[in-house]
Image (tube, rainbow, N blue to C red; front, side):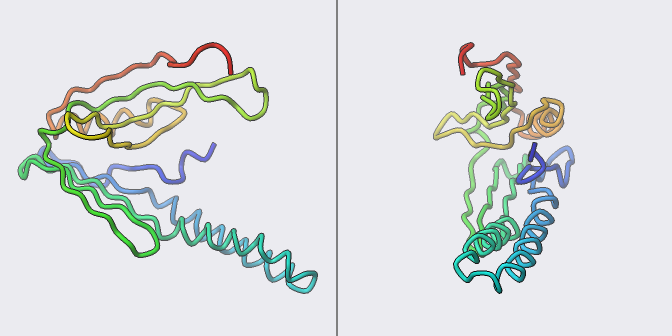
Amino acid sequence: MLDWIGSLRLRERSSMRVVLSLSRSTLVAGWLLIGASSLLAYLIWPLSAWLLAIPVAGILGGGLLCSLRRTLIFDREGGVLEVEQGAFGTAKRATIPLFHLRAVVIVARAEARLLGALASSARYVAYLDRRVGNAIYLDESARCADLLPMAEAIAEVAELRLEYDATSQASGSA
């Protein structure tokens, strides 16, 4: 339902470079949450100061969404993947050689719904499988078609295999 918040989008694509970053919808959602929570705080203030905790939490959550940063740069010429991510002004950077990456993987994983405990639906998760270290999470979506162009671009530039598993990995019970 909220796939558009925090999802990666292709910002630049060439034969030697792919740049992924968070979509602008994350920033917009953050500002909308701040605005709605501020209005709620203004309306609640005369009723009770204790109830202000709810809109303040919404303002903090909106601030988190506004400040989220995530950029992945696949550079074939340099032979590296540069990852930068952070929130609230802090940033964590990593440079990973492309030869440490094994494949771009899209896999279907079952997800139990909150309403109707027996019903489940597939969510597609895209990640980079590494030869050394843990997998690098890219994105997830309810539709595989949303992830495939990004995965194909990465596989082409980084010269990686594209592994695609559309079958659900969960047992029948929720």
